[in-house]
Image (cartoon, rainbow, N blue to C red; front, side):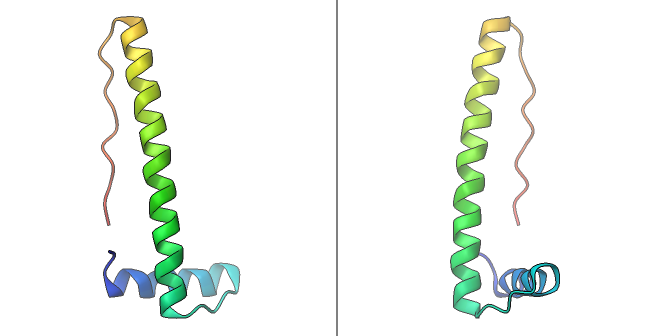
Length: 68
């Protein structure tokens, strides 16, 4: 789970950038969905990069994920 300050920062971003005033619990749910989405995208990208590097016969540097 993300830290309370991170959730509060997400709430602030949602309010300032999108005009959404969400509760802390709603922000936790939004953060959970965003994190899950990012994990899926990263898995797809990693699999594609590995597959591409195998087909090219070259090693490919993969970017390292940045955590909160």
